[in-house]
Image 1 (cartoon, rainbow, N blue to C red):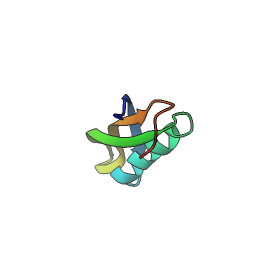
Image 2 (tube, rainbow, N blue to C red):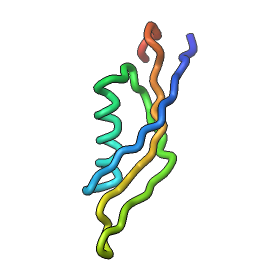
Image 3 (cartoon, rainbow, N blue to C red):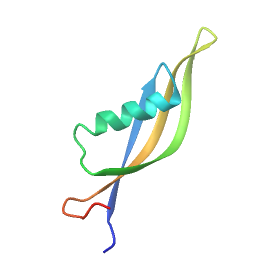
Image 4 (cartoon, rainbow, N blue to C red):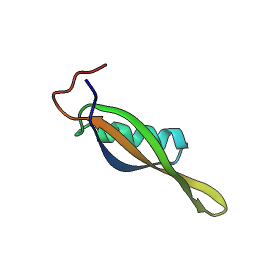
Length: 72
C-alpha cells in the first residue's frame, strides 16, 4: 500500500549551528505534529551582528503520514 504525506514548512533558528536550527524546528513541531517521517531543507540563512554570525535560520519542509497508515 502506498503512503500519503502531508507537508508543512518550518523555520528553526539557533545561535550554535545549522544542524541545531534543524533539530530545534523538528523537536518543537514534534510536540504537536504526529508521524513525521522526513525533512527537506529549502533555505539556509543567517543574521550578522557586529561583523559576526549571530544566529542561523533554516527553513525546511517536513513530511508526515496521515493517521491510520502503516509505519515501515
